[in-house]
Length: 138
Image 1 (cartoon, rainbow, N blue to C red):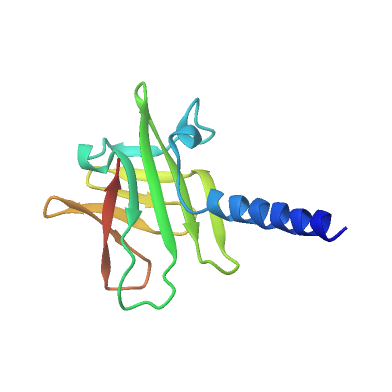
Image 2 (cartoon, rainbow, N blue to C red):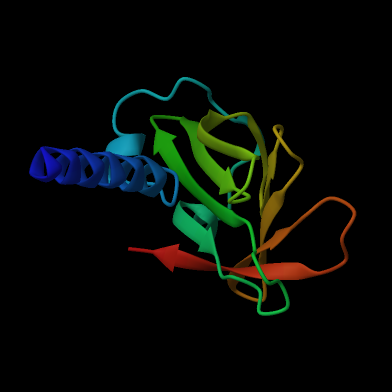
């Protein structure tokens, strides 16, 4: 009986860990196939914005939110698979409404903007002056 209880608790723990891990990043499998939402393109994106990026955790924040995006091109259209997680109650992962305007892509979901500055991709959050470095994921 104790052995069965141990294995049940172990399996439950592993299941919860797997569920949480699903929100921590974007995988190539997430962006396969046809997007559910395409971006509004005012001007084609700077090629540096294409691909998978994650925000480098700012050292000044004790528990920083996770931000990831993956900008894909499908034919002559663009789409963004977006993920953010506050590690508490606010989280999103999926195809999201974005506006692309050359060096900047802006989320219609939360207003976060990702842009090219001095040859690197950075992020800004509505109402904040600080910008945050994004790291390209391979």
